[in-house]
Image (cartoon, rainbow, N blue to C red; front, side, top):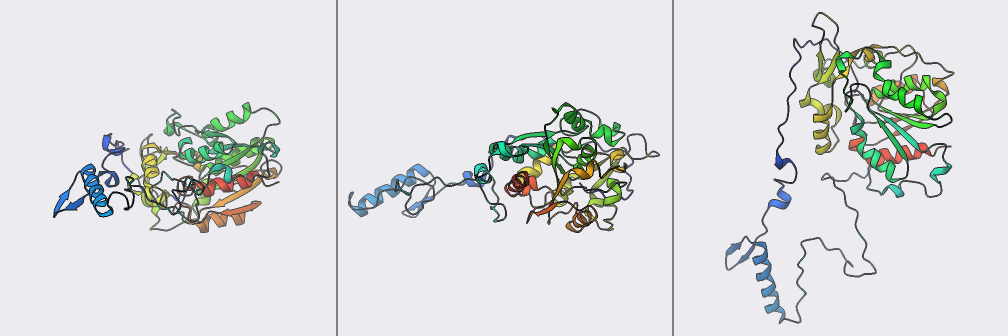
Length: 377
């Protein structure tokens, strides 16, 4: 996430709060399924659905004489005009999300998001490599992975050192190269001549920039999603220090960890779980906020301080694209556009209504944008 540091010490690292598993969290307690449907007869409330249905059926038979009345509809589903016609019957799209579907994030099937006139095997590459932001892990891309793979693309999501399920202690990460090692290991094993579309979110923007400088010939395009797109000689801290506001939500949320003692520099930064929704997920579904709250890990401090060395010959040779997130509270749109002005990409995309985590808040729109970028000649 965007980092705007103020030194607010925490004397001791606070023990993490664990959420006890409750079986009611999955499937239980929903008012949608838990409410009883009732029917009235002779002033009495019939609570049993089957009994209420039987009484209603009997009344319809009496009113219609058993033959002229309307057929009893045993389904609780909504009915649409022409639904009984085999000719007009079509399956309606369903969403697993309980939130209202935004017009800016339409529900489309993966094959509908790919230009039918362009075949994947005609692209320079159909392989996406996804790099998470600070505190996140490969898990945050689960919707994007499903959509891209459903459209026929190959996808690799990387857990950087000390992130996601990578077991290394975040407090022991001493450099950007150490933090990015899982990504550089991937590129070293990539067959010569093979290219990928490299995607970075948040602090992952600095990480993919580091890799672009090392492996420019293996990167077809680079996509920065609400990400740190730095110039040579800048650190992530330098860039985000431009966002100075005493009431900044990031400053309220950040918790420095001093694993080497309070008299030494911080080793990592954690985030106040109670502020995660407002900071990173203000437009995202509750289920994804819950996933993040139990999955996010501290951000290593040393890599944030490290200044990048980027050359025009290597880093500058890779085509860059930026994806703006206008409802972002971690990296405000003004800061995103400042980065775009200082380090101009080839093209800028705007995800209307997206918060800092568009892979949660606008997965369909993000997917469509990534596919579109892959097809730019």
